[in-house]
Image (cartoon, rainbow, N blue to C red; front, top):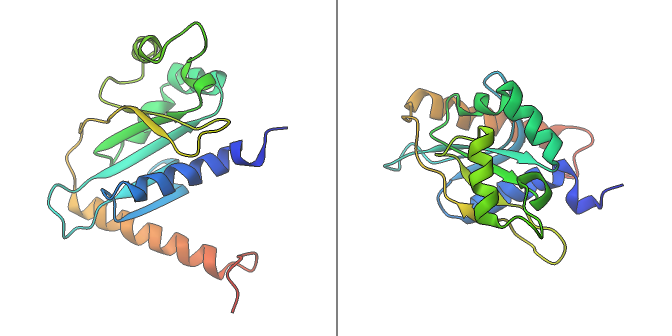
Length: 172
């Protein structure tokens, strides 16, 4: 069984917390329903800021999970409504090992079908505490203000639900 810090949910939360610390995004969440499915993590800027962005993060723990999403085209659905996307994966998922360097792994990811404009985050393993950017994401979509506002409201509702849920750790 995986260590608690390496569960998919914990990695999604780690990515959202990391994104918020980058001081690019004003609001981040993880494991939230968005568009036609769920997004592992997402960050959005305030509508009051110029150069707004919505960034979707897809988290992968295993290579087989990544290959399945690339093969079926599921990976591309995260682009809907986003201006930027990141693939956040463990070394195993990204194909980085003793025989394959980070540079070689990045090249192989593009060959597999991960878009060139997607950013790549290496998720921490033993000893590391935060994700590391292997390649920054490039803007591919135009920010639509109504989508930005809709996402902000959706995240706020999600947080309210999580807080008001009877299983929430936040109590009166």
